[in-house]
Length: 114
Image 1: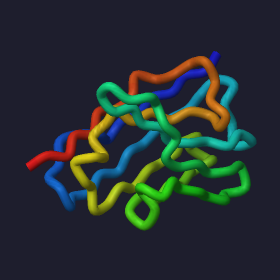
Image 2: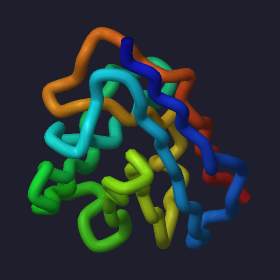
Image 3: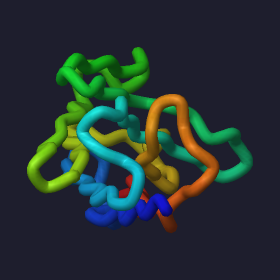
Image 4: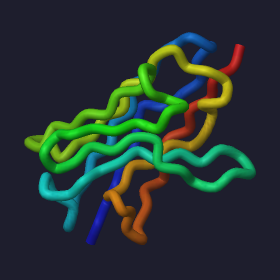
């Protein structure tokens, strides 16, 4: 059974930074490609960053240069360092496999506002 626990969100001013963490357990392991997804109010959930089992990363254009995904396989944890945050980054952030499985965690709310 998959468990995903996200943390690290909060309220931050534009230009600020946050670091999200996701602890995965169950059938998810270092062999899985992992990603951070986000869902803004009224919008579909989207994949914003992924990291392969081998450590190769990719980020969507809207966050490229500002967000960085990483992983610590020994801790079964995936991170998302978010810098230069913008109001349009406001969303609930989730981690999951890529492609995603059917089980999601509770997510962590990120609100960027002055």
